[in-house]
Image (cartoon, rainbow, N blue to C red; front, side, top):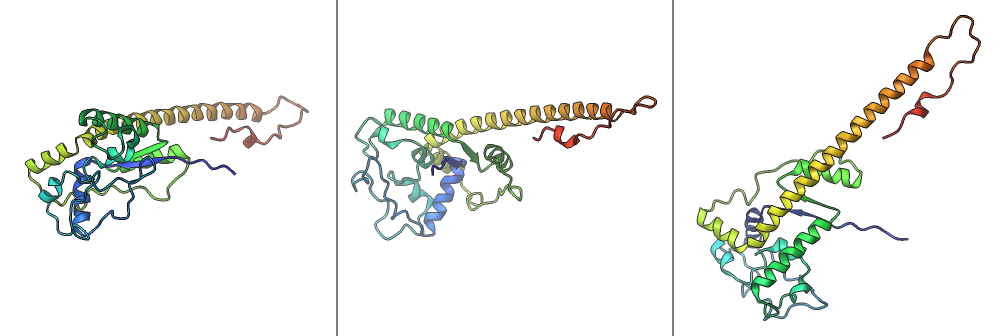
Length: 238
């Protein structure tokens, strides 16, 4: 028995996502069990050094979090979506940084575009609409837009925000691309739905006219049989 698998993902504003991960790590979260497999192996300690010496990074300040050049929080969305084997996985000496960044970003864009579905956390209702239309299902309750998160409660100055954007410049570019593609998909799907609705209404009016003709009284003494065909059988189900 064969099963169909669909790749889907959710993207988030890079600054908010970065701050959320920082708060998560600050509370003691780690990814120690992650193998970071690429081309059949995990990265060596030299390829992927750790940012902290102890068991976790509890209590890390935002400045410390940003100062670790090996921090996988940087451009995490691009790295998670891209094919790392194209750039030698975690081996930063495989090619120059500029070429590596260009390939990673383009790979992430291509993979995102080819996914059956992706959503954006800042557009919950539109995300729900696209998911339901893509997979032909209906959620029992509408998605809720929560604009108050741990990240939104973090107060940072403009300098810190700019630093985060610089550290996540690939994610920033990917997110702009994703927002544009998301809106295109949303408006296209909306347009198709409006077209189907108009076609459905036209078909319903046509069937109503035919029904009235069938139900029209016969002339004097007409002996022809009455129409007995089930009207519902004529209705096109949408």
